[in-house]
Image 1: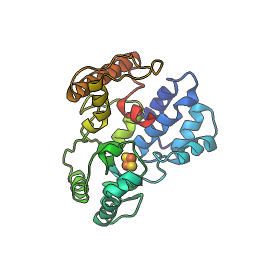
Image 2: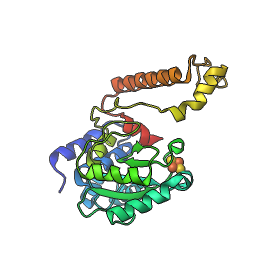
Image 3: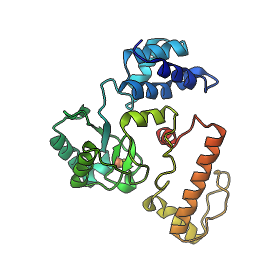
Image 4: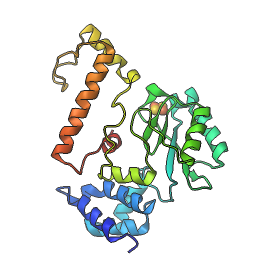
Length: 260
Ligand code: FES
């Protein structure tokens, strides 16, 4: 088996987190990607053996979701949103410029092995269009020039911070977080940005609340939009802390993003 014993043990650990072991397949495949740089035949076989399902069933999942890669990914996965809003706001131009700059096509890796470029669908970040993602962390309001500077910084090994998240790690490190092994960066960066909170600020100013039964407390958040944004950040951090306390190895910010 190509996977080392540590990885094999961690795959078993993930499977053991769930009442039905096969529920652990998605994070297990992320761990395979972290260890192997892609979903390998050996990784598929290991998941199948641990979960007592067939390799065809594992393969069916791995080929259904676009986050699972059958070809090796570079040190950084750079996704350019080319869905409707980002496209008209400049996403198509960014993607075209990066293809030319990196001398790659879609889903290809630069010759130095650093950057894998892929055009991706809407990331529910349309209020920051055009959006680029590095290892699924947001880089908001990009231009062709800023995107070129971004990949050049990553290739040069400079520290880069997501516009709404933590310092960027490598793709393999991010895959380990998605497998449920936190890297301690969950609290870095804001939990929400101003444009996403405009509606909340307006509701706050006017005393609007969500209808009863919607899960809302029914109480308007008092204060200016900036104060409301701070309260939202604080309550999200408290919620994340509570979840971590309850299940220290099974919930991360990256997992939450993936679930959205
Ligand atoms: S269209 Fe790009 S994030 Fe929605």
